[in-house]
Image 1 (cartoon, one colour):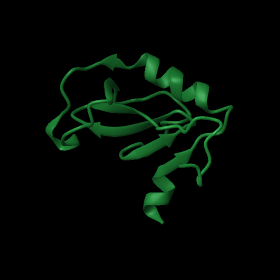
Image 2 (cartoon, helix red, strand yellow):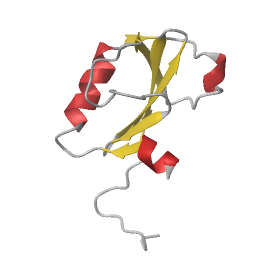
Image 3 (cartoon, helix red, strand yellow):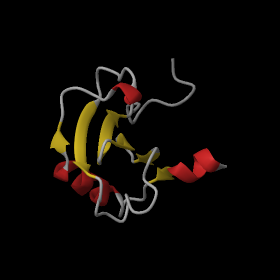
Length: 100
């Protein structure tokens, strides 16, 4: 249950808030060791510890925000909030679960 509370599925109205949060982050090349090895397709950013956003309010450590096209992981460490953005794979519109 604790993991489910930290994973937020964003509504269409919330997705722009996640995009705004990402746009305020400072791009970073190297992840802190605690984040481990990140996938090549990931992007990394950093915000000051007081992340002023309704999506990042409260205990934002380890929270994941899942939209239709991207996932955003928030991780608090070293006086800041790290953001890891990952693209989510999407199937073509005409493909179904039973398509070859």
